[in-house]
Amino acid sequence: MSVNVRDIMKKDVIVAQRDMPVSEALDLMKTHKIRHLPIVNKQNEILGIVSDRDLRDAAPSIFDEKHKEFINLPVSKVMIEDVITALPLDFVEESANTMTENQISCLPVEEDGVLAGIITETDLLLTLVRLTGAAMPTSRLEIEVPNESGQLSEVSNIIKDHQINIQSVLVYQSFSDNTKKILVFRVQCMDMRSLLKSLKEANYKIIWPTELEMKP
Amino acid sequence: MSQEAAYIFSPEQLQYKFHNEHPFNQHRLSITNDLLMKLGALSPETILPARKATIDELLLIHDEDYVQAVIGAAEGQSRSSYRTTFGIGTEDTPVFPHMHDAAAWLVGGTLAAVDYVFDSGYKHALNLGGGLHHGFRGKASGFCIYNDSSIAIEYIRKKYDARVLYVDTDAHHGDGVQWAFYNDPDVCTLSFHESGRFLFPGTGHVNERGHGDGYGYSFNIPLEAFTEDESWLVAYKAAMREVTEYFKPDIILTQNGADAHYYDPLTHLCGTINIFHEIPKLAHELAHEFCGGKWIAVGGGGYDIWRVVPRAWSLIWLEMSEQKETLKQSIPKVWLDNWQEEAPVQLPPEWHDPKGLYPMIPRKKEIEKKNERTLLKALKPIYDQQKKVKS
Image (tube, rainbow over all chains, first blue to last red; front, side, top):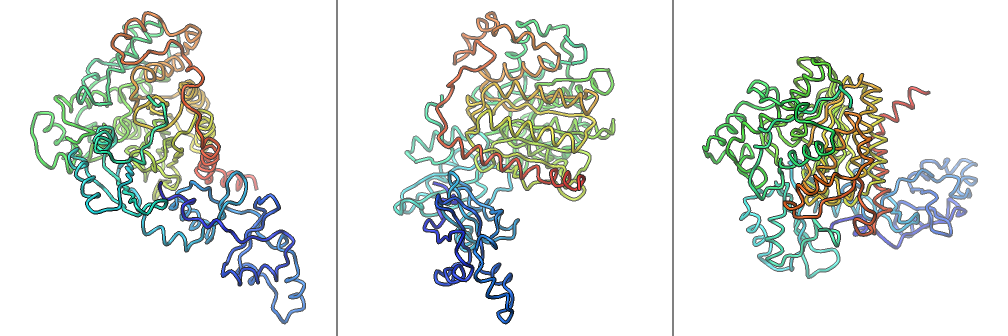
């Protein structure tokens, strides 16, 4: 499993319905120590989103008479409706890009049209330190190995036997199985088939490239 | 048959051969030529020769020490720098005898195509031996030694001062050509490929839009692994037309790698032969609409040399030379008989693939949605500009 949004998203999302008053929404965020609140309908479809900062910025001064009127408004009147979302299988670094580009710090995750989770900048920062990009012409090779010493060295040796240069390596504990490690290599090679064959012969579990079943 | 199209081939192009097990196999040129001849769509006397590119022409793009290294390696010299600095002698790009000459003949074919179109009254020209889009200024990469398309584009710029739209439908990102013209506003590159997250060379992200004066003249449509015909074609048709209208080129150069097919052993896209019916059709149409017909097509990747490449590449020529009526017949039996014994797989008897070529893709919907988003992102600058013009 690679690091997808699905792997790091929070699945128990605190949400509000469209008729919740602004004051209650602010309290809800304060209670749960969150800064974003997706607004959903009964089918859990995303209607909009509010952030604590947006609400505070938009609110008239507490000494202003309009303040009371504002905090009693339903959130649907103040929410942002044009919500930028992520998909569960988006790569984490892409989501980071989306956030940076749009100057936002949270992405609701949408699956089959309904809210499935949420990721924030904080989740990303924790994950991003584990990821690296690709600037040189390289192929991605992803292998699951037992979580024990010597694995990286053994796999690297097989790559070395093929005289293939390794551009970058990422090692992390599997998100789904803590007895496993994931090794992600970027290798300077376009045709990985003979390398993959050697790895399979050495009984390594190759996560990428995968093949569709029945592919000849 | 239209007299406006030039088919370029020389037997010297077949010498570009690393070794018997290597996936890049120019034997596909012979197999394709034969299919077109058996179809009656090409005859030996109408084939126009390629030529060997000169050193000076290679230096339009490549560094002198790199070309010297290729010549040295071809002569049997061996230095450790060949592999580490120049990428020659790697598993992807091993040394073979006459590699300099063979690579220069592939380049010369594309240069000949340029001259046929600008000098000899042809509107279109096809050099299936070209399309080696991974070649860098100073380094071989991904089976490519010299980058014929980059050299041809620079040659067009210097000799004919025309603005070039380069369109790359190989399943791998057209990195060599993109980086060669990344700062150049007179060359626009548009590449459709399997996302670099999944496939070599890893680049070709939507955000790679060019640099300096060239900003806004590099477009990338990275598609998800297991993308199928429909989603691929939606992206192709929209981006191809939008980018052509936006850039208004004087000539279109298309790179026609045939490795986006499900059968291709090196990639993970799930195209069928359908997309190879559509690719040249739209290129042809746009060339007439915007460039007075000027269209050069080259080959590229394509590693199922039996079931995919001969059909896909024949379709380019049939489109270019307006001989698509020949598609009403099945694949000629004489061609099948000629090659079936040598082919390790069953040759396709028809111009279209049968339904149910591959198992159902479970993530189909998500893949389509993702590709839709990628397309919108890639074209956003064009759409934004259109909005400004309207308002």
